Structures are given as C-alpha cells and as structure tokens.
Image (tube, rainbow, N blue to C red; front, side, top):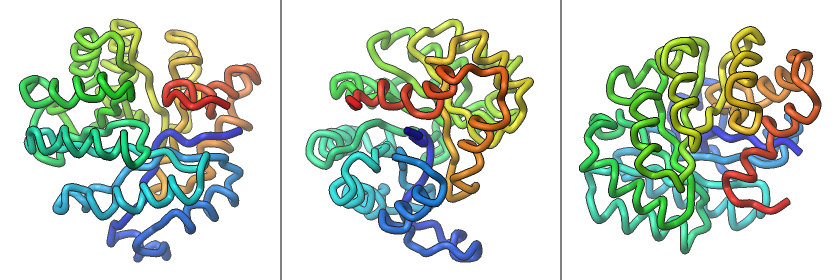
Amino acid sequence: MIYDAHAYLGVDPSWGAWGLPVPLEGEQWVQLMDEAGITGVCVAPPSPGVVDDFRPDNERIAKAIREYPGRFFGYARAKPKRGQAALDDLRCWVEERGFHAVMMSTVDEYYQLIDRHLVDPVVETASQLSVPVFFHTDDTFGATSTPSMVADIAADFPGTTFIIGPAGASGGGGWSGEILPALKRASNTVIVIDAVFRPNIIQPAVEAVGADRVLMGSRAPYSPAALMPIFFRDHLPALTPEQKEAIMGRNLMRILGIKQ
C-alpha cells in the first residue's frame, strides 16, 4: 500500500491553467490516486486559502475524509498569530472533523520559527491532541523556517513527531547543510522527500537516519502524483523492499496513528 505524505486539496487558481479542476475536491483526488496506484494521501489546504484562514479548504478536506474513509488524511494548517482562535480551530479540526496532523508555514503570516511565543502554543496543542506537526523548511522560507529551528522545537517537545519538508534537491539548506544534522540531533523528527530524484541524495539519508524516519510525498497537484512512487519503486535499487515499503507508506501510517 502506498501513502502520500504531502499533497494539497482545495482551491488554487493556478491549477486551472494546468487543466485541473478548481476546486480540486476529493472525487478528483481519488481519480488521481487510482491512476497513480496510491492508496491514500495526507492533504493540506493550498496557500491561497490563507485569506479565509483555510476554512473553505479545510471543509473540503473534512468532506473527503468523511466520504472516502482510509483514503484521505488531513493537515490542519495553522496561523499562530490568530492566538487562541487558532488553537480552538485546531482542536475542532482534529477532534470533531477527523484531521490527523498540523501544518505550519511561516509565509502564511510572515513569522519565524524562533518566535517561540507564537509557535509553542500551537505545538503544545498538537502535543495534547497527539498529532504530528509538519513544518515547511525549503528554500522558499529562507531564514524564517530551517531544519535546525525545527530540531530546537523538537527537543522541547520530545513526545511529538515533527515532519521536516518538503525536501527538494536544495531545500532546507541542502542535505549536507542542515537537514541531516537536524534529523540526527532530534530523534523525534522525520523528513518527507518530494521533488528530488537523485539516488545519491536519498540513499545516504536513509543510511544516516534509517528508513523509518523517511516519508514519501508528491506535493501534488503541483507535481504529478505518480512520480515519486515510480521513482522509489523503480529507480532506487540500493533500497531493500522492506525499506521501500516503509518509506512509501508504512511510516506515515505509524506517525498518524493509523492501524493497518
């Protein structure tokens, strides 16, 4: 079974130019998954939803979770500057609407992960809800959100799993820069790999931290959903079948607390 750890569902006007439906809803995503041989996907609201605090897209994700059980898992995207309202929303999306994780992107409100007075209440709420936290750390976010900053937060919340991503070829300061040191420093961190198709990058990462701390994501529909499954399945001969099985789905299910 293949589970995609990083994708998007909702409204991004740019998708229309690519021939995709806008909004992209659960029904269309099921078709994408079936065509790519993907069992399930963990989806987040895309960035344009920030103006409405992601509510309309979160509702679409909640609907997909309800209508297609076992195929959709949700990231509740949090804006920490909203204060208590953000925390109340997180509890609602997780406890009442079936979401499985939290996503934070510093460009949503232009803060930094070192602004712990903003970040920590969200992480503490996620910890109380027993759900993982995904931090965007690729080059788009620059100095506002780095793997090293995530490791600092993870050290203070050892009972929570933190997902560092997306890990592109040069994202997050580069693999030899910050990503691997951060993963080694905080054992409760994992990395989601998408948009990188280089075995000489992925194999050393697996060897350094173990296959159980690596997730596979497509970042679809910004890139084709089928690419990463094909790459991991057919173009990484140095990985064992057991390692591929873990990276391509079993690890995500374990982190989300989903029994298979």
